[in-house]
Every structure is written in C-alpha cells, then in structure tokens.
Length: 338
Image 1 (tube, rainbow, N blue to C red):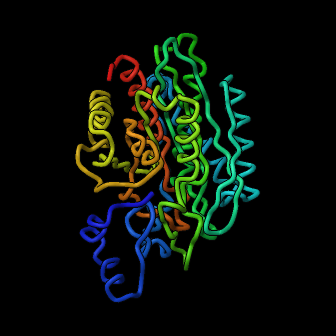
Image 2: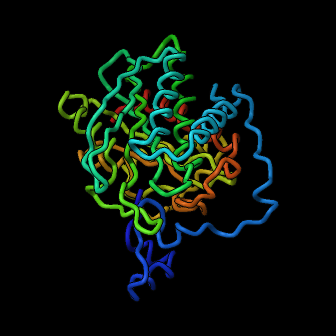
C-alpha cells in the first residue's frame, strides 16, 4: 500500500527533508519508506510481552482469534513470501489445503505478471460462497510479502491472511447463506516488486498485481457489476490495534463498518478519524467505481516494512476484534440495499 503525498509531508518531515536534499525517497503503502529500512527502537519488555489472549469465539460471532493467530504463525514460519519464491508456493499450498478442509468452494487463477524484476507467476485464490441472489460481497487480503531481505510480514500481510482464513472457516460452515454471495479473495502481488536499498519502489504499474487481475477478470465475466461492496483487510492484528478510516474509501461503507464496530464495543480500536489516505488492493475496485473500503492499521504500525514485523507484535485479541467486525459487517451488508 502507499499513502498520499500530503500526509507524508505532514507526518513524516524527515522523509520530506530527505526528498528536498536528494538523499532519500518515500514510497509504498505505509507512511514513508525512508524510515522502513531501520526498525524503530523498542524496549525489551515490549518485545517479550505476551500477547493478550483472544476472547472465546462465542463472544466474537464464532470467530476464533487464537486460530487466526495460529494460521498467521504458520504463514510466518515459511519465511519471506515474495511472489515466485519457494515460500510463497508453500503459502499457497497451505491456504488452499486449509480452505478445502473447511469445505470451502475455491477457484484458483494462475497468471503472469510483468514486474520491474521480470515476469513472475502469481496466483489468486478465491473462495466463492453462493448466496440466494445475484449480489456479491467481496472480502480481500493479500498474502505476499515485500521483497526486503528477512522480512516475514507477520502483520503485513500475515495477520489479514490468517484473519480471512478464519472468516472463511466460519462462513463456509454456515448451512444457510444470505441473499448475497460472499467471495473471499487471497490475492498475490500487492507489494511493489522493485526494492532499492531496502525501500520498495511503489508505482501504479509495479503494485496491486493480484487485485488488478481480479478486478479485470470479474469485469470480463460480468461479475464486477454484481459486487455490492468490497472489504479489504491489511495489517489488522497488532497489539494495541488502532484502525482509522481511509478517506479514499467509499464513505457509506466506512460508515457501516465503523457503526458496526461501535455497536460491538470496539470504538477505541476502530477510531472515527482519518488515516490520511491509502493506496491498497481496494484501489483496483474503486477505479471501476465499485464501493470499497480498506480496513488497515496503516500508517500507525511502527514496524511496517521492517524485519521487526514479527509474531511478537501481534495479538490474538486484536485478530478476534477485527474478525468479529468483518463477520458482523457482512451480516449488515446482507441486510443493506445500495
């Protein structure tokens, strides 16, 4: 993901100074990338603190935060997962194996992506849970990691992938579905593939490969016009979770999600203020005039695109909160007409 330039200047003056002096560059999906190669200092107590346990699933709509945390840990155990790597192939096999064990109907789209580091094979994995009508509610996450050495991406995007695996488990087990189909897309290639001196070189042509492929294929099939809403998860599992609204997302959809979160008692986590704007996988659908919202802690996660984005920064409780909000937002969308 990438942030808008104006907010980078306001919040990251060091990055701005580097640009002016010609000694650095800001890019990709979080705040700025001039700070991404060196992780912020942390206290020993913070690094060693145990994550808060998840509440029992019966308190979070059936979503098991501990299970989502375990899925995430398994993904992280494969190591760095950039497109085309052995680790991402293991990741794809793992995701597919788990989804099939949940009884989910799954489609796979293998495609070629022309990137700044060459031609890469990528794979989108899409759960398609049928509804009784023609509408589609599309949930999304990316599962690749940025091509930075030793970057294992526990939060970005292990957490959202673990979350969507658990959402799939819950929804695929339901005997009765709502009027809208629910598709859950695990997309490849969100990150910019070119990295220079530890900084991802985000551009419109070298990012969002999986979501752009999905939007294009859905347009070709006629399914794009059936989408009622897109809800994207990206970086949703950190301790002391702090999620703010993306002003570029569809406002009525932001309002719906934040209203759901407040009703569930999570107003201190889903904060009704702006994150300044983010380019992320939802952007591919916004460009097709499809309602879409990005649910992300970006840019408030201090370890974004650093090798300190590891499992000790995550919390099963945070995953449970995020997952609960996603499940209840799907219910709300099923009852909403737009």
